[in-house]
Length: 137
Image 1 (cartoon, rainbow, N blue to C red):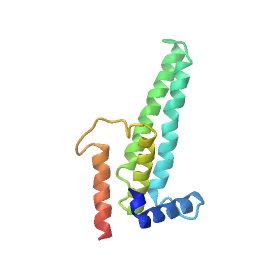
Image 2: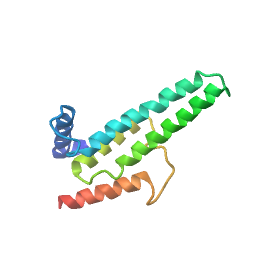
Image 3: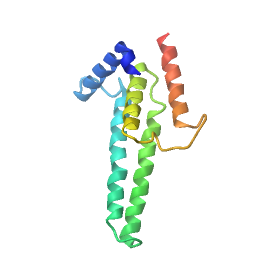
C-alpha cells in the first residue's frame, strides 16, 4: 500500500528513524510507541507457552504457568487493540498498516479476534483511517 505512495512511505520512514534515534518523541508519532509495546507483548505468549509445556501436566506449577500464559495472551490482545484507535494522522495510520501487513505476512492472524462490525479491530482502524484522510483535505 505504501509503496504506491512515495511521499507517505518517505514520511513514515523518516519519522521511524527520528523516533528510533530519539530525535522525535512518541507524541509526534504515538503509533510507533504502541507498535513497540505490541512487539514486546506478542513475544511474551510464545515464551509463556514454552514455560507451560516444560511443566508437569496438571501440577501446581503447570496451573501457575497456564495462568501466566493466559495473562500474556490477554496483554497481547490489549496491546493490539490500543493500536486500532491511534491518533488519526497519516503517519500513525501508515505505521499501523505497515506493522499489520508485516505481522500478517509472517502468517499470524491480526489480531486474534472474531469480532465483526463496529466493535471489531479492523472496523476501528478503518474509522481512524477515515478521520486521517479527512484531515488531509
